[in-house]
Image 1 (tube, rainbow, N blue to C red):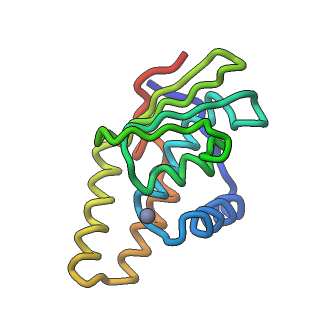
Image 2: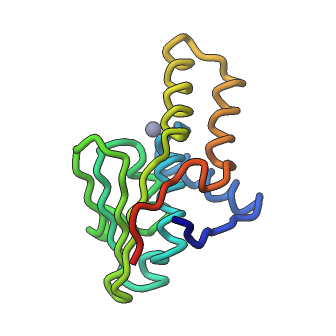
Image 3: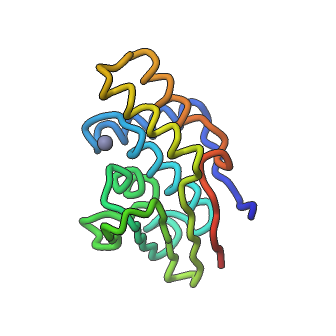
Length: 152
Ligand SMILES: [Zn+2]
């Protein structure tokens, strides 16, 4: 299924991922991939506050939550994000105002790259190679990392 996508300029992307690092406290694959899921969902349902009343449900308790919060404006403070520890990298974002929603999940390729990073880190880490993986996750075309399961 193809979906509308949000294209950030190089500068917007840097600002966004710098803000993610500040929010999350470190750079890691899952916070970035959460942001990619959130941005993919945002292309359809918009951002909370700007596009109406948006809520998010994520079926995993990981660093991805912070990327989703930043991308969608669905935050703990707004009480419009829920994380269920079900071990599934799947996000449903709903725009209650516009009565529309989208469900997206991480692709096998996204998980493979996340795993590659984790293996490098536990092996003591090659910082240059690790940063390359993170930049790759920030810049990869959306269809490489995100699958759209349902959209209404
Ligand atoms: Zn993290």
